Amino acid sequence: GQNIDQPTEMTATEGAIVQINCTYQTSGFNGLFWYQQHAGEAPTFLSYNVLDGLEEKGRFSSFLSRSKGYSYLLLKELQMKDSASYLCAVREDSNYQLIWGAGTKLIIKP
Amino acid sequence: GAVVSQHPSWVICKSGTSVKIECRSLDFQATTMFWYRQFPKQSLMLMATSNEGSKATYEQGVEKDKFLINHASLTLSTLTVTSAHPEDSSFYICSAPRGSLGEKLFFGSGTQLSVL
Image 1 (cartoon, rainbow over the protein chains, first blue to last red):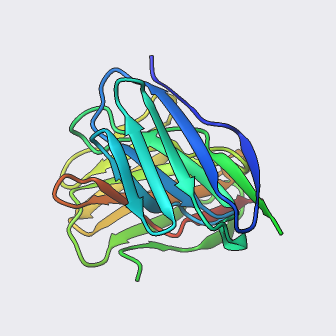
Image 2: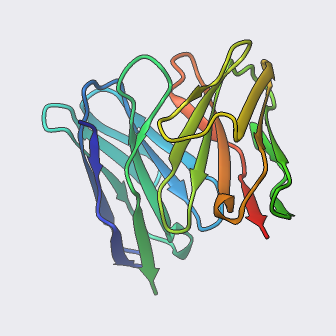
Image 3: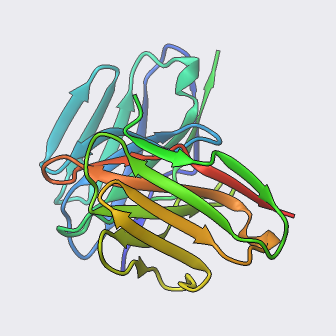
């Protein structure tokens, strides 16, 4: 079956670094996505990984290991505005549908 | 700026009425759009895939006669919640894939529906 696991909630300190993990079990794999969603708003695209390795984009980086069914989102130099839910999603095949994780609520403390 | 526009942002209606939500891709053509529902503190739940020029594909458990989807053009998909009831109150979000491989999924701003 399909399954995507990520922690329900994490807490970190402003200025620090936090890593949000995502593990997946799907029948196929054609890309992994990370989205940020602030309360009451629609998700916004953060990153896309289809090959193994680390993709860096400013303060945010995303890593993928296809053999392990594992990804993480790394947030550096945390700011209060980074308090949000972070959603991991996997695309199984060539269509555009995504399988969504439940999201990780990240709380940033001063 | 926004590449997917969704209207209205919020709507309050009486039980038994119908509500139409529009989703537009602003500077690209979207042959496929997705409609999601999200309850408080829960993740996105895919309701249906809207296909331009053909019937929408509904996820298991979603009533196609209650949630009417029309994708009449390459830039517009609409979701109509028919005979709305309080249990239909939710945050509805549309999205459209973009990019050569559809690797980026852009979301509308969402519609908060409250049925009294």
